[in-house]
Image 1 (cartoon, rainbow, N blue to C red):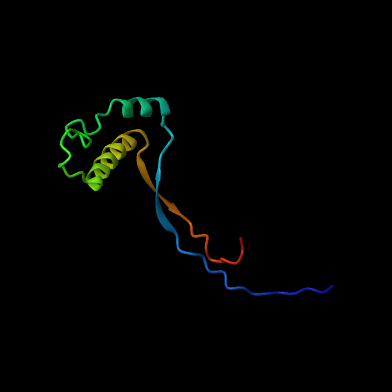
Image 2 (cartoon, rainbow, N blue to C red):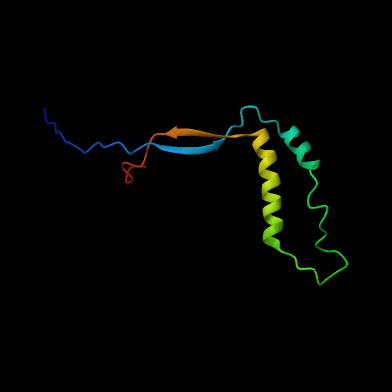
Length: 93
């Protein structure tokens, strides 16, 4: 009988803490309904009569992102999980 023993360096990659959304209690209909009820920049009319008004796209995006993430956090809150490291042998996929 012929056999071979090869000793490899089996180091575990360090675990990481990753952030995920918890969709366990997520209801897409309720999420959509709440987004439909949100008032999106009703005080500001960027395409109004005054063309001299400066439109800051960054501010509009920040407002949208803030409101959207508040709604998303209510329906699918962020959770942290510890994930074991998998990249200790990148040549093996």
